Image 1: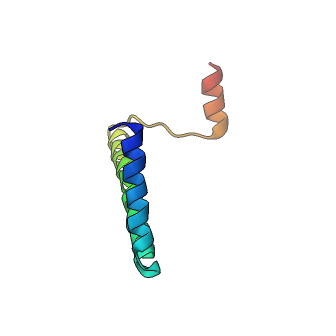
Image 2: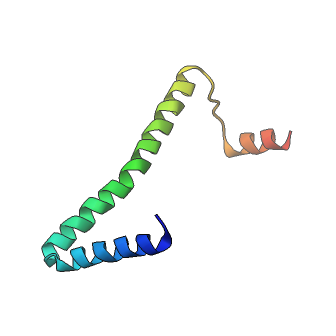
Length: 74
């Protein structure tokens, strides 16, 4: 899809949204907002699962900020 087609498609979508009632527009915004956030939620869930697995395998160390800074200096 070239830029002109994308612009045309976006313009059509905007026109459809503008034809909706204010309540319908608000509902649509809520739906789009949730759909845009969902992939990030899945990324976070995956990162948490990986972190828990690493913790269970003993691959995680704990310490203070000072300990971390000492280790970074070495």
